[in-house]
Length: 472
Ligand code: MN
Image (cartoon, rainbow, N blue to C red; front, side, top):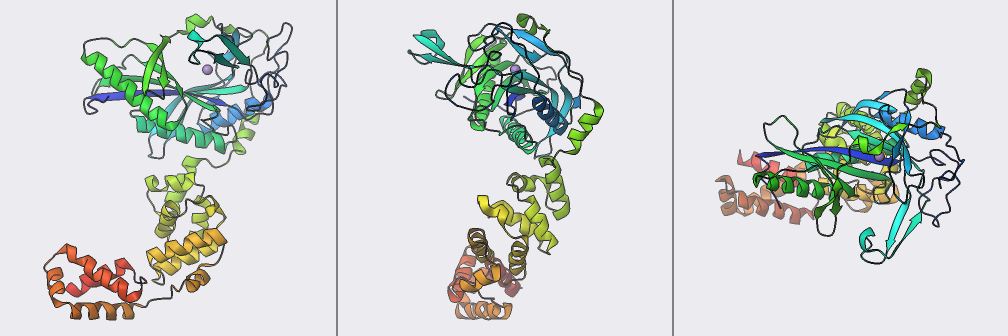
């Protein structure tokens, strides 16, 4: 399924639920830990037993505030509310959440490409348990019986609601990846989509390009990888365009993404807030962290990915869009230290981008890294040799000069190279004639000849430049 992206615009807003890395649950001292034997991380509150009362977990509040500040939100007085609905994995028959007064409001997230996405709010709430439907196809409809595990019930969640500012599947993927980096950086989440510690619900609508009003949206559930997210958005947008082009209407629905058939399916018509009969939670007081406490939390935040990208770009002169991967790999400090040791900034970042995907790269000695780059820019090593030496440095932690010597990558001075190039030109006048007449295909003949004569030690770029110079 596809559609004309020049005629139609996709509008996406994401809601991300993230489990907070607390020691215990949001309102009780039951342990917060992924997995475990079913129904072992529970207590009377988790099971909603009569007489049990919630006590708010301070660590969860602090993590929520850290995330809110990292997303440039206002941290405000917040009130817990009961969201009423019946489901077997929700033993109290209501979820304690926040409604009209969330803990964090109005923020933003900057993507690696520089786009800024609005954040509407982030609120605290408890997670549900987990149902397993046995028999039939594993779906509730034709199951013979169902099992419920309450280990996850009551685990603290932060629901981060983004504004509908995303305009493509790629934007949406970049947003989730960036949000994950921020959550991991502030210690709020382990960022594991596949274990469900981050869960993405995705609101998709379409409109004709130039229209300013939003179309009717559908919410897609069960998107648990970045790849699925992109596929689900593209599929859903195409489905909606087809409906509209056929003269039909898009109905507001909650839909389920099926990874196996690559489609979204109707789950239910979308609930409105009224359906949940929200009211303030009578067993909890409002949360109003004082400004001093909030400022202490802010002061303890680490440098965030967007700020690190700007710093690396500013200090090396490499454009912002090229430094994203380096920061994602956590190699920005290494690069800055190498530049501090005199390495060429461009070459340093390029190596980190292309040749340092190994997880051990962060342990490189910055002085060694700088020496390697300087050997390359000084003409002692070709680009290919530098790459080989760098790989070995990561592997063994050795110094570049010794590794290069052990591999026989001795310096090739430019006079030697000129002599070889001139000899080759003199020996092949016909080929040289063709080269001078602009036959680009013959370049390889000369470069190959030089490589053969030098045992691969020559720098391809230097050879091409010499040929150009000789042509005059
Ligand atoms: Mn929620």
